[in-house]
Length: 277
Image (cartoon, rainbow, N blue to C red; front, side, top):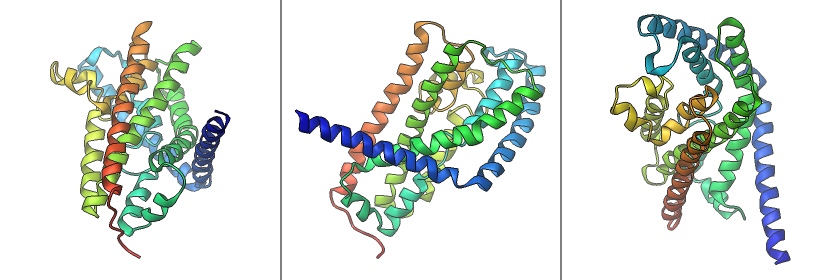
């Protein structure tokens, strides 16, 4: 029993160290972080004025007033690097390691491949949220009237939702990266995955603004967990037990996608043909 506990404790310590490594790695990219803050802020202003024009014509579109719509814009910019839409943010490195054959070294490690990359991605996401998320959001809050909650509870629920959003985003990108085992060059699936995430996450327009019927369907898809649900949690669209339901929706998709990723990984590594050197 004590041996099992020691192994579990050792595993947690290992993946915590991997997460810290992922965090420290992105801290070193200070120039890239500064450029990202500037870019996200500029796009935040561009989207804000587009939303203002749209909401002047269609007030309360999707059930959001103007302040809530602008909050959605700036939250999207804050989460853009935290929950990447395409196969980037480190997972592109996994894709390249599969392509050039370095994945064979990873498979020899005494660690679970999926958990290793998940821990690294969580560390990366924490760094990006602090580095490229907080500042654009602060600029948006200073420049415009946003509907940010004053109580701590919605913020706490939002942070949990953001962690689940990162997990769902990772699981989707991991599946896309694994296609490199069969396709070798999986850039095509990466582009398709990025387009699907951009459209169905709500990054272009809140999913609640989509036509009835179609909007109800897309809000059930996993991409809704990446922005739509965290935004609605922060904006107070869920109350009481409904908050737990929203978090459960994200957790359910995270569990399903991680399980599918594990099955695909198992199939891919059952007989590995090492490419490259």
